[in-house]
Amino acid sequence: MDGIKEWAYPSTRVGDAIKFRPACLELMYRLGCDPWAESDTTLGELGLRCGQGTQELVQELSSLPVPDRNSPWEELPAYSLIDYLTNEHRSILHSDLPALRSILDMPFEEASGGSLFWVLLDSFHRFTDSLRTHIQEEEDYLFPAILKNEHALNQGGPEHRIKSIAGDILASPSVIRGEERLDAALDDWTRAIGEHQGIGERPKLAELAARAMQDLEKKLRAHGNLEKKALYPIAARIEKELALAKES
Image (cartoon, rainbow, N blue to C red):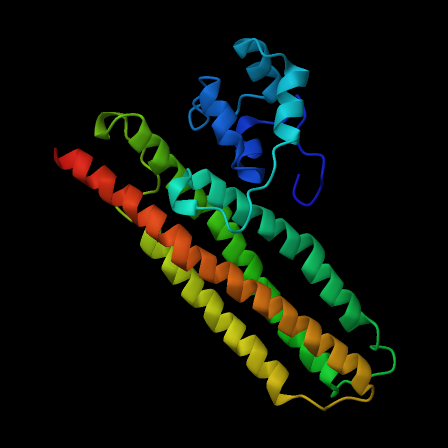
């Protein structure tokens, strides 16, 4: 389902719908669905059960708008920000990275193994491996933890608390640690680009590749800053309120 525009079908499971579009949670909650306990329920089954109708439900989910980057995140449910971040993940993985790879592929037949192109390609592969791991960790582990905690808090306190992740590990510090690891990978990537500027048999294409990498770096830095400055405080607040509810 990743990377395609059509994702909501009667056979789509609730858990997959939430992962792809966290903003689905607003409708799920409104329909009285506990998506964390009913992740294997299909949209078709949910539509029949709630009386909305399968096609109507699928259409409503398919037409959900992506929140604006400048939304007042602290005033909105956490799933709004996470939906925006997840949408950016799709753009990065399925648009930005393939576009950059296509640039790197252009000069290979004429470039020698010691050229800038091979250096850039090697650094590209090493960085994208780190980036894909980072995104997968967020979408499989951190984002659900934050969303489950928010749901637990809204359900009325610790007696309804859903344990978001194993043990007593908190999601909010993990957000920061994950961004620090990605920042380090970005630093290594940009250092590799900078150290080899001007090397290569076809400098115009080399410069094009380097500029594309720098543009993607800026986008990733902005994405990471949004997680650190907006998502982390929201996750920390939710966890603090849950802890206080547990003590009371």
